[in-house]
Image (tube, rainbow, N blue to C red; front, side):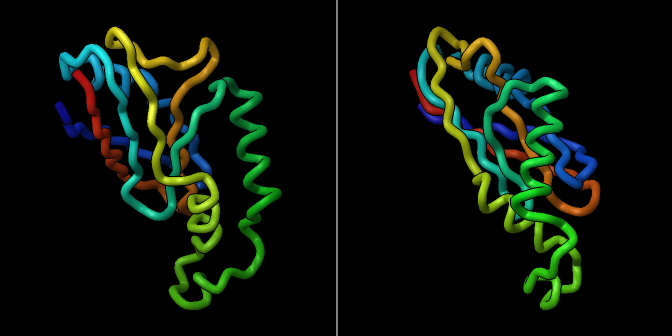
Length: 138
């Protein structure tokens, strides 16, 4: 069986990191499936998804990583072409990736004790986002 669900988010932009674990677990539970996988997909080119230990120190470290690896204050060809100032957001999102797949067993995500699913909004402004969940199982 396959079901598609959506999660709506309001973000602050500028490397906003949002824990979406509860929403994903809720949507999986609502399907009635016992075992399977859920894929979280970001439709857009300035956001990404991964897993982390969602605590303030690591959240800060992750933001710092992106600031060091893909700074906001250098020239990007995308900005020259479009003038929207978010070239860094596109590069950051392409490094992180637009999807994540997590197995679930007995209706529970198989995440580690300190592992949460997070959405990162790299754009340079607040956004309304819609994530797509593709849930497959039995």
